[in-house]
Length: 155
Figure 1 (cartoon, rainbow, N blue to C red):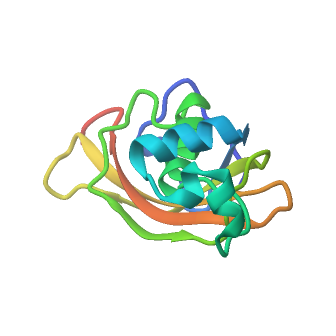
Figure 2 (cartoon, rainbow, N blue to C red; figure 1 turned 135 degrees about the vertical axis):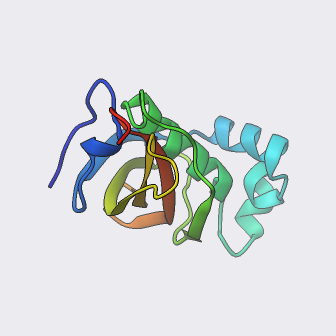
């Protein structure tokens, strides 16, 4: 079921099947190059002339840039506000299509699993699948993540 983020989210606020959207967000050539130079200095992220000759046929955003910017869009939309306690990691990261200057993405987050902690009554674990889609509704990036969320009232 499609939902919006409330003022705060705690473990009890999520159910398997919940779906959230964030965005749109766009990528400019300048920010792609700046991110690439700082964090992923490969020519197809930093040099338009080099990128044109590369098999991508033009400048593309670093996959790390796509993940960071789309996660930021979720946070700006209210994701994890109040109850977020971090994550032990992400799984199954896939960069499925290049993101180019001028592309506009939206993020879809789905709840795929929920379980209370068996050892810490103040928290639970929520599994999410994440997809970033471009303006053509093509998935450009995907991953799975488990988030640790505070409970409203410890059990």
